[in-house]
Image (cartoon, rainbow, N blue to C red; front, side, top):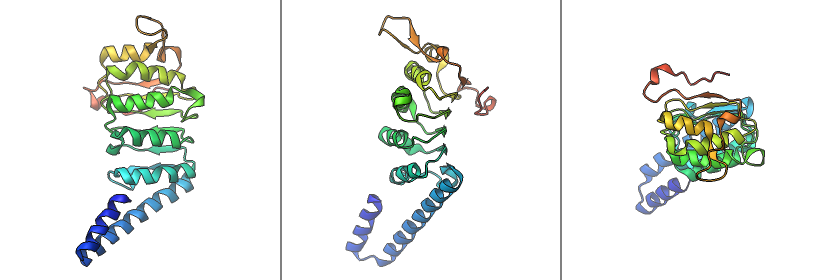
Length: 220
């Protein structure tokens, strides 16, 4: 990791041997945890990152993507991985983890920017990334009406997607309508479009104001 290398270099220059020992121990521990995560992913085909890291940092996730891609995992739970707010990190994960059948991105703080990245990847359909993704959870991510139309269109074009969890997001009535109708097919002013109305999809979208009522599951 580049950050750890920079810290180590500063400590070497300062001659603080005790601090250097501590840094090396922490770095070794992090590598051991990451190795355990990948070993379990290889053994079981799925992984919940939160079982290994409380909140993995940017560099940890960057290092995990290629290792998880090599493991060809089918299910990945990234709940509460707040570093995924960095859209390039999210995009790298979506592009590289092509074997995913189920992806949980709940409570990652994605917002409309993250939803736009997801829309671009899902919208490519079978020719894009996540070609066999069947279940996607975007629960509690601050996704609003502004990104709903593009997300609806992208989900409709994702041929394998059968379950979409958008509960506890501030979509409102307008956002739900945009999600169902999708983006205008002929540009602005065209009422026709491709959205969730064109697809049989189990969608969960409980209102953000009622967190006690949702359980994160779909209806199909």
